[in-house]
Length: 140
Picture 1: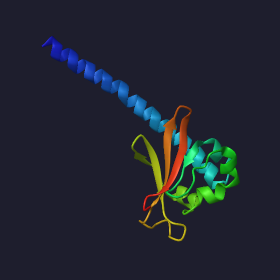
Picture 2: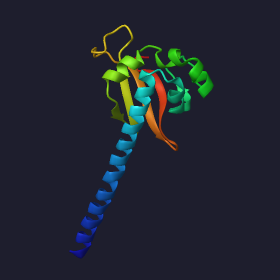
Picture 3: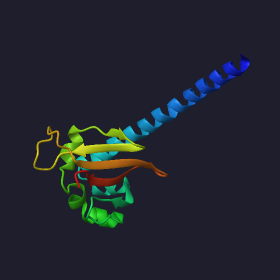
């Protein structure tokens, strides 16, 4: 009986330790997301670049963005390639996906209320914190 009690206590304690880590990771992401979203909405290219991991993964057929300088130079072409990121980020919340989060947006020509949302911006936790790590058109 003592072995079973010890096992239950160990599992319970491990569960208690695990929950705050996930809550902290989510809180960290929420802080990151507010900063990232604000930078996109205000067109702050430098801050968006600082919150991006390089090389930045891009949709099929588009070369990765290798450096901050390249990102800042081609910011609008990259961030607003097929979607209006500013409009989307103001109306859409990130969704947990795998080990990170994703924001799905409509094409520029569609209203933000559209259910057709194939443009994916994704974010992952890196050694230096949360970063924007890729952009994709999930239809391709």
